Amino acid sequence: MRKISRREKRRIERLRRIGFMLVAISVIVIIFFLFNTSFFKLDIIGIAGNDRVSNDEIIASSGLRYGENILKANLDTASKNIEQLPYIKNVEITRTSRNKLTITVEEREEDFAYYSAGKIFICDYEGRILNIVQMTDVTPIIRGYELDGVEIGSNIFDKEELKGLKDILDTARELDELKKYTEIKLQSASEYGLVREGGTSIDFGSATDIKYKFVFIKNIVEKMAEDGMKPQIIKLNSDADPVVVPMKVEE
Image 1 (cartoon, rainbow, N blue to C red):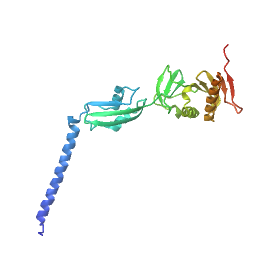
Image 2: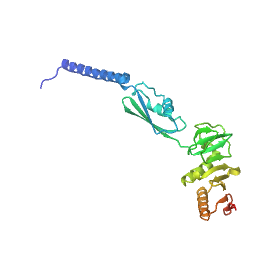
Image 3: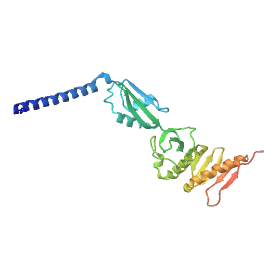
Image 4: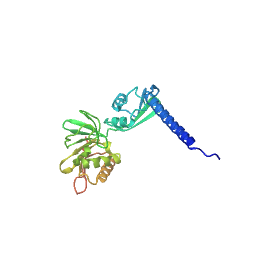
């Protein structure tokens, strides 16, 4: 086997280096082409999953620009921008073709309303304020504690005074009872008053034994309905047994 001379080794090493350089230059040229060619121009932005928020709002908030190179588009930043919209909970952006992006969103649902200082704050189940209006048909509506220093995007449950309210709402929702109540009022000494559909007024007491209280109310309403009656007042705010006052029957 012939021994390779030093001169040949140097020539082989030189060729290897030239090869590496050519590959590197080729990669750079390809990358430059990909990021600067109009072949990957963003022409289409598809939107899915939205109901309350318009396509135009989503696209405008994303920061994405028609005509930009789709490979240069910062999808993480665009997703975070869209999530700043009050009604948007989650965002996913995918490249679905060489010139199309698809934005899929999950919207927040209106869950309850909160009346304070002449305004109605529409909130999702987490307590995030989605909108501020003067009139609404969203129920239940909460009253009794003034919300200070909040705006769209704030979470009302960040306030320590409303932790008990959150427990009440969460439990009612878990039992599929929340929408059967039209009003919840925060009364003195951390006690709550509820109004159920049909006009039943409930002295709920403090935010303790919440599940027991809701189940009791549900059962008593259903039992009285079987007898053609309705409760007018249910008192659960004392250590004594619950008190149920039936509605007077109109003659």
